[in-house]
Image 1 (spheres, rainbow, N blue to C red):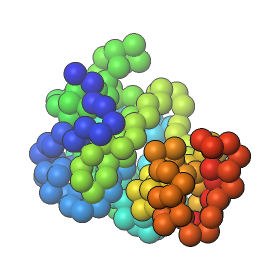
Image 2: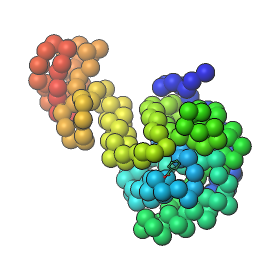
Image 3: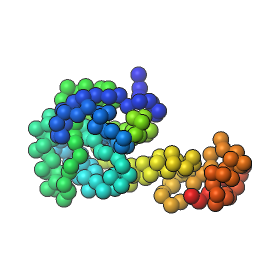
Image 4: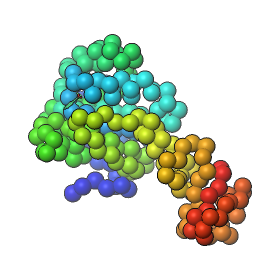
Amino acid sequence: MSLRLGDTAPNFTIDSTAGQINFHDWAGDSWVFFFSHPADFTPVCTTEMGRTAQLAKEFEARDVKPLGLSTDTVEEHVKWIEDVNDTQNCDLQFPIVADADHKVAELYEMIHAGESETAAVRSVFIIDPNKKIRLTMTYPMAVGRNFDEILRVIDALQTSDANNCALPADWRKGDDVIIPPSISNEEAKGLFPNGWNEIRPYLRTTKL
Ligand code: BEZ
């Protein structure tokens, strides 16, 4: 059964570079950027781990905890982190799960047999403080993720939650937002004191 948006992110207990973690306890009341990579000591993965480490302050500002995963062991992760720090000029502090027996990768459907029978693809799960899965993305082994998009979509989810609004294509923090059609004009007057631009009755934009 596939994991769907709105599902509770399955819990697990597993070894990581930060010791054994129980996922739900570790996440606490924070958002989580849970992402898998195919293998340690591989080039694309090294750049992705480095980018995540370089963006530590950006994740922290959004109350997001990154959590990596691959089917390598803790010992391999620990050795590789030295290389990541060395080559990507960073100080990687977030935990990386060691899923050598594929338990979590299977739970989260991170192994796609068309890409590899044993290694995870580049899955992304954005999980909110209620442990709900809010966004999933899957990238192939050969293509690194776009971290601007990962931060953008976290901003979008958090803005939508806080303001009862929706976000247009290519929205970035500070841009106008959309008043969802489920909100009547009468209700919108209370929720969006800046008024709105009614392009169509179903397409109303406003500034927050
Ligand atoms: C990489 O990280 O470069 C990589 C890993 C597995 C397959 C292809 C590329």
